[in-house]
Length: 308
Image 1 (cartoon, rainbow, N blue to C red):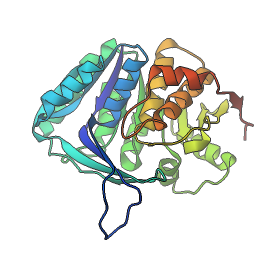
Image 2: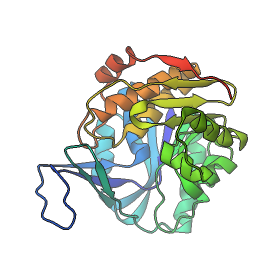
Image 3: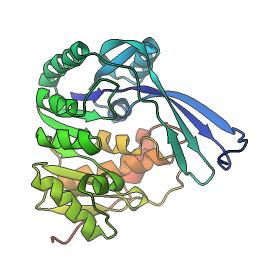
Image 4: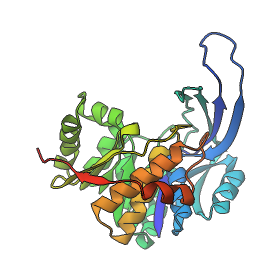
């Protein structure tokens, strides 16, 4: 079983426009409403790869039933800590050039007692999980150090997808794998990377801090995976991009399935890029389908990068 922990679930309103004109009237061409949250997206991806998955985290009274129904229809088991208030609402605006503008709500306040309740729940649930995924933002009242607390409470291999102080906390707690994108890696290290060599050096800095594997997503160029000894690269398949929302979450879904199966790093990277690529061709916040994932997976090739 794979466990995903979503500290700050949400409702995504994806609005499609021809061109986003700031300060002027914009007409909506299409609007999609969907329950979401990074780790919850990952849970759906895992289920679509026909694996057993349980979603946990904080949930809020207003919108909770619809959220759980949505996940259960995707064959995701749910075990959340319920809080007062409502789900946060995010607005994602996508124009005809597939440029994404995001307006993300910070979420409701979560008490210290509820934070402790989730840590206890994660400790119990993760005893039955070979892989635990923790990803996304934190709600009000929750310190970035809570990411480290979640990592420490988890059993088995832990994957974290977060940024800045949250990522620092997860790394210091001994997380197994992290999946930054290029911007997040640059921000974490306080550097700018142009070449693949520079990107790899940036990944090594996380390895030096104790992370076992770094999966770096670099958009349409694909991804890099390194454990500090062997570094691999996989170029993404050339596809028409409809929306990048959920692509990273899909990558983690595929990577966690490979980790559960004990597959090689080559398979982890190839599967992750296949899932991420299959996700970007769907509109709004919709994730990949198993059929499209299989189609793209067959076309991908993983190559070794020269060690530095």
